[in-house]
Image (cartoon, rainbow, N blue to C red; front, top):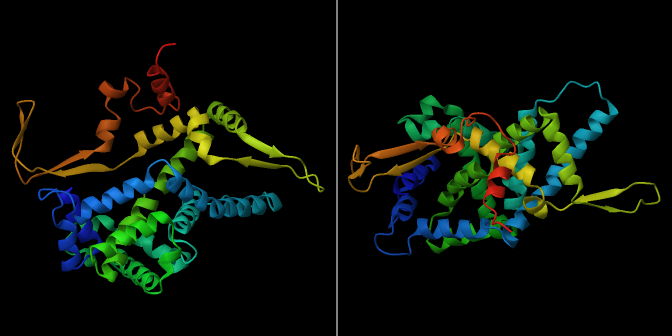
Length: 331
């Protein structure tokens, strides 16, 4: 955790005071109470299954629905239009929907310049982590970070954060509690935005690709979702309203959930990074020296045939349905 905190401080460009607060007692050596442990606990509690997470999910739906309706109307009126660039469309739609849900009606990313600034930053984020001169290697990322910091500094100064989600207000309250300077709180939003969007957009893309390239799966998922739709009688114009409660998908749509889990298994490119706190010998063969950094890339774990079987590298949308069924107690 200590290494991750230091890396995050560097990527966000935090000042000395904020960096000291973040790294103080980061490993819990002095007992509970440090900022990083407290902040992490707040995030986990607000994103655990329950009312807070449901609030965020529901709050993201209006922007998603509006974007999909706009696209559908456009192509129904002129079906011969050129196909959309799916990644770009998903990037804009998800960025706005997720940030609206978190930051509220004064969401800084509603400004197109701020939205683009974030993705400029995202494209060059490794330069902040690995390069001693990120301004030379990734000038667009440096400029993007500057725009985001200005936008969120104004957001906080204007008190716009008071209308944000419960999740976000809890994050800010923790920062204020530990006397983190306001501009550094704005800089920390770079991490929040990355968590919101950087993995969500590619996951959505691959989810769509897997589903619509497999007609059997597509048909199965349609039946699964139709089973949880509720319908209202037709109105005076003959229109039928059908409603999908997203909060029951996890329980009622096992194939959809399994497909999503399979997408994350095969397409996750993250790595777990840990700082070795003391000399450690693994399997009597591998000596990890204190102070060294251990990186565990997700693809190495997620495609290991000894864990996932001979088809470890092949997408199987039913993989996690089988696993969940195999763990059910016998009747």
